Amino acid sequence: MIWRLWQVLAVLYTVLSLTFVNANNANKYISSDHVVKTKLGRIRGVPQNFEGKKVTAFLGVPYGQPPTKKLRFSNPKMVLPWKGIKDATTPAQPCFHFPDSKFKGFRGSEMWNPKGNMTEDCLNMNIWVPHDTDGSVIVWIFGGGFFTGSPSLDVYNGTALAAKKRTIVVNINYRLGPFGFLFLGDNSPAEGNMGLQDQQVALRWVHKHISSFGGNPKRVTLFGEASGAASATAHLAAPGSYEFFDKIIGNGGTIMNSWASRTNTSMLELSMKLAERLNCTKKGKKPTIVHRCMVEHPAHVVLKEAAVVSYQIGLVLTFAFIPITSDKNFFRGNVFDRLRDKDIKKNVSIVLGTVKDEATFFLPYYFGHNGFSFNNSFSADGKENMALINISQYNYAMNATAPFLGKSLKPLLEAYKNVSKRKTEGERLRDGVGRFMGDYFYTCNVIDFANIVSNIIDGPLYMYYFTKRSVANPWPEWMGKQLENETIFSRNIMSFWKHFIKTGAPAIFWPKYDRMERKALVLGEESVKDFYPIMTNVHGSYCKLIEKAKASTNNGTVKDSISKDEITLVMKWTLWEVCKREDDRTYVEEIHQREDKK
Image (cartoon, rainbow, N blue to C red; front, side, top):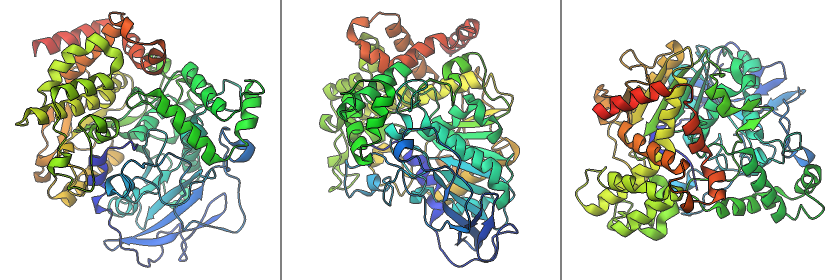
C-alpha cells in the first residue's frame, strides 16, 4: 500500500527529467571540486545540470546519529562532527518500511518503492544547491502513511526545482512504522513520535548549517504530501520546531486527518501486540524488559510482525504505527489541546490543497475483490480495468469505508450516488465511492484544519483544488483526467510555490482563505491557458453531510453498530470534531445557516 497524491506529484515533477553533466563551481560557498565546509566537517557533492543551469547535489548527508542496536526506538540525537571529507554522492538509503508488493512489475506501484537496501542507519538527507541560489530553502517531507517512503525516489529529485527557481531543496529522511512510532509509555525507552522528532532534528540541522550552502535559515518552507503534509502541519504544534520554518505547503493532509494520529492508549495496545508477536512479553510487560527484547530482533523481523499487526486492524486507511496525540518531547502536550487553545506557531503563512480523485488509488487495494480489481496485464484503460460496479458493490464499499457510521451512512449513500456526471450507472457508482473516500479521509479534514488554523495564525492561508492528471500516470483514466501541456502547467505551479516562498502569497489573484467563504483556487485544465477558476465553499455540502453523520454516531444514535476497539482506533477524530469548536459555537451556527441558504 502506498500513500500519495499521484496527480500532484507526477505533474509537479514532470520536468525532473535530468541530464547529468560536469558543472563548475556551484556558488561561492562550494569549491571547484564540489566540497562545502560546514561546522560539522567538509562534505563532497556531485555536479548536476538542468537545462544549462548548474546544481550541486549533496546526497545522503547525515543529520542524526544512527538509531541502531540499543538506540533503536530511541529519541534522535544530532550527528557528531567528523574529520576529513564526508562523501555525499550516493542518495540517502531508505529507512525500514513496508514496500508495495500488490502489483509487482507495474510501474504505477513499483515507482513508489525506494531503491537501495533498507537500513536503520537512515537519519540523512539529500540537498540540491543551485549555482545562483537566492537563499530560500524548501524542506521536502515525503508521504507514505508513516510506514513507507523515501527522500530518494526519482519523482522527488530536486534538481529541476533548484535550477529553475534558484531555491535550495532539502529532502529529509525519517524513521517509519514501529521504528519511528512504537510507544511503550511515557518515560520508557520508546516514548513515541520518534519519526517526528527525526524531522525536527533534521530541521535543526538545516537551521544551523544551511548557511554553509548559501541558504538563509530564516527562509525555510516545509513542503509535504499526505503524511508528509500531516508532518509539516504537526510542526505547527511542536514548540521545538517553531524557529526552523516560516511557511508551509501541504498537499492532501494535515495532522488533523483521521489517519495521521492515534491516542496514546491505542498506540500502547498496538505496540504491546507487536511485542507479543515477537515473544517479548514472556518475562513481563515492563517497558525496559520489552524494549531489551525488541532491540535484539533483526529489523526485518520487527517489520514483518508489525505488518501483521497493522493488517489485523482491518479498517480502510487505518495504519498501526503513526504519531500519538500527546507526548512530552515533540508536542509537549496534546496536539488537539494546542489547536483548541490556539497554542501553536502563529508567525507562519500556509498553502493547503486537496486533489480530485484523492482516494481512487486505494480502491484496487481495499476493494479489488469487490469490483475494483486492477490487472496490469491488460491496458490500464481497457474494459477489464473500468471498475463498473453495481449497487450491491457500491453499498459494500461505502459501508466498509466507514463501518462505524452505521445507519448514519444512509444520507451519504444517496448523496454520493450522483456526485459524478458520467453516463453509465456503473461509472457513477464507482466515482461515488472514490469521491466519498477522498472526502472522508482527506478533503474534509483538510478543510476543517484550514477553518481552525486560518483563525489562529498571523499570516495568510491559501487553499487550492487540484484537478489535473499527469499524462505519465499509468493507472486507469477514471482515476483522474488526462493532462495536456504538462510541462507548461508544471512550471506554472513551481512559479506559484516560488512566489509564495518569496512573498508569502502564491499569486496576486489567489484569494486568501477564510472560514466564511472558503475560497480555493482550482488548478485544472484551464490553468494551462493562465485561467484559474475560484471555488467558493469548497466541498461544503458534502463535508457537512459527513460531519453530521459523524456527530450523530458520536451522540450514540448508532452506538450498537460500533465496537469499543473501533471507537478507540478510529473515532478519536470524531470526538475532536465535536469538541474542537467548543469556544466558537456561534460561528458554527452562522456557517451552517449560510450554507443552508445556498
